[in-house]
Image (tube, rainbow, N blue to C red; front, top):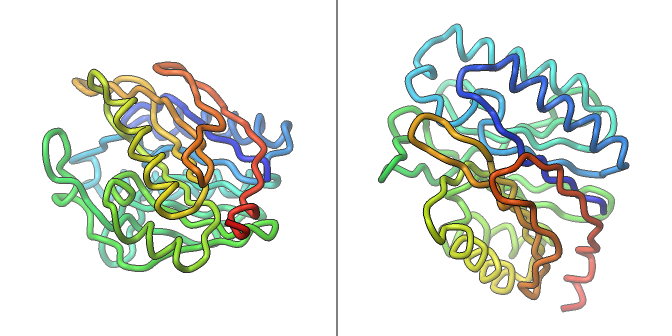
Length: 246
């Protein structure tokens, strides 16, 4: 499997500008024959959108943008972070393939400490979502979901996920990238699964997002790592089916 992590700089509220960056990354990943491309958390709206989420027109614009993005997905399957309004509002990951949205995963753990205030805007998801792509079982998580040492990531691993992906908007502070990478290495070893972490990059008001997206094998070894504080499409070939033997 060829995996692409689109570490891009989004702007809160700039839905059309964010869409252009997503489309450019999609075209780049397709030209490199990627099978799966990951985008950061809430890439369609930028992070954190905060009270913009209380405006129906903003949510409608985000929905239309996501649909346009999905229609551009002809090559690699794309996992795109976006709000989903379905009775409640969810921080979601859209699965886009074959020019349409095939499904959504909804973030389970909503951080409500420090700079985060997600419980104000979002309902918590409850269901797991696992894809089968080229014979590889891929489990989906969003940011905080994988900071927890148990479910949903451990449930995905027990259900047979060979690769667990995490789309994220994880802010920077000194030493954060080392602590975060060590956490993901521990998760990979504990779950005996490959782990792919795609993080946001750039600045938004008082927040700075450092990127440092990373791909880790099931023994906790780093396969590929994106640069810090720079936009990058990180592409790597992996063989998660080796997990079955271990």
